Length: 147
Image (cartoon, rainbow, N blue to C red; front, side, top):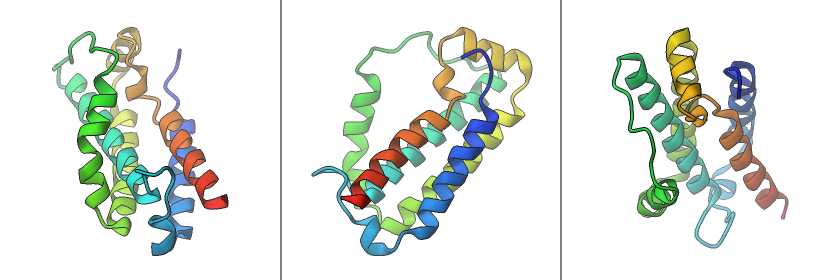
């Protein structure tokens, strides 16, 4: 990634908003996989957007994250938080996803050029590219809803 995908993030946030606005409570509870409902996937999206927001904010304040984490790190976080995400009411998970996407995009938009360059150089561009994980989650949800 050579640039910050602000337009792509905004488009994915709009896609998220449109989908959530169309979902009823029954659809929020629909399974995506045996352990993951639509609401659980939305809660996961909310978490990772908040994670990006907080880490970008720390970069902006000079608190740089560790240079590397083990490859299993994100998966361990997902497995750890899955029971919490499953316990959230569907509408609450959806609302968290919307507010987290907005907050993450806003924090990324405020980031100064040297901060953005540092994040890109550190190979942590996933903090800035929120469109890819949102769209991946939305694709999974839409596929489940069509099934």
